[in-house]
Amino acid sequence: MSTSNGMLRGLAVASVFAGVLAALPARAELLASCAFSSGTSVGGDRIDRGLYVSNYPGQSLRSIKLRHVGGVAGAYKITMTARLSTFVGTVIGEPYTASVNLGTTVGTDVTYEFGDMPVPVGSRITFAMTATGPGTVFYDTGPDVSCSNVTETEDASAPLSSARRDHMGYEVRGRAATQSFYDCPFGTGGDHISRGVYITNFPGETLRKVSFRYETLTGGVRTMRLTARQDGYGGSVVGVVQTKTINFTGGAAGGQVIDWDFGGAFVRKNGTITFTHEVTAGDGNVYHSPTTGACSNVVETEGTGGTLDTTRGTRGIKVTGDREAGYRQVVEYFVPSLNHYFISGRPNEQALLDQFPAVYQRTGATFLGFPSVESPQGSVPICRFYLPASAGGPNSHFYGQPADCNAIIALSNPVFQFEGYDFAMYTPTSNVCPSYAPNKVYRSFNNRSTVNDGNHRYTTTVGNYNSMTALGWVAEGAVFCSDTTAP
Image (tube, rainbow, N blue to C red):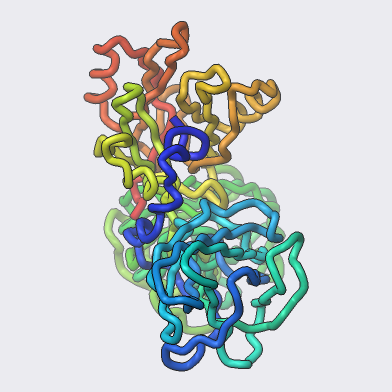
């Protein structure tokens, strides 16, 4: 079973894709736009003219909105394809087809959804359209006012065609690039690192880099550890505990600003995050610096007790993160006709599958992962291969870690068709998940390779896992670990 090569293609899913992604969380930010014509009017060009957005300021593409009229009033299907770099670049997500009724004078706003698919910050994204219906379709080019970073092209030929104008009406939404949430300037001197620091009302859903300035009385090498926790000093650990070995020069002149990278670990938006330091090797006399200005929501405490104890003021600190985590809800489906299970962490693919509930049945099981790019420190991208029946495979999928993916690709086996990276997860060591991601995802195998019917099931409960073993499936243990602080 494959959404890209198998049964779904036979079901002509493109014609029913319109509108099904509207159920995605409507939190994505407006990242790029140019004004539409006033009111509902359309001053437009034919949609065979492409467009592209340069220096894209986000890390994902959720949607693009355009305004259309038809040369003839009636029902149209308009397909939008988004690609990286050029009009023949890598397709982002899946092409989206909107089914709309268009008039000839009053414009209709149409939003094309791409399922929050990851894109590199600063990239170029191209958009090309085709349409079927009773006439030609036009889109609004807006007032004759230049807009930065958008270009309409004469057509959508490779690589970027020739530029026609530097404006058109559009709105693009997605997850913004990593933000700087706190920038409290560092002073000199300070308090011993045994005093904790916490942040209240944290505005993001992930924690990336945290910076402190340190001083020591005497020079020398120290190994230090920084732990971030949710809610209080006894709360759940955020991401991976950070360890660094630092060579200090004694005195204020030898103070150093050190960056600790939590890699985008989930945190609770508007929650409290605590930070505690330890010196695990070397002289323990290390001090973190105050700030030279006011820094709201950043508090230093007398100690690091189980509660947020007596406050002492504020600290110098720099913190970056993401306003929207972009987590992936990985959904399990069952295909009765094959007696196979299938998982997907791709929002646009889930929307497609849900259009055929008799073929792809949600089991109700889900777990949280990350986008396959910009994933948190310690997690790994999970690749996916389709093994189609047409190539001699069991009409099933295989999911693996990077080492598995590279080994399979190196075999050049035509049975294994690479479908990219589906999501990212933490992984267990000796069947043990880390404390910051303790939720195990178990894998079972139906052991039917000899009749070319191999299939895996991924379950999040011991009960489901044991029931598969009772049915004769091979118990393969925990293969993924899910974060507890995920939104």
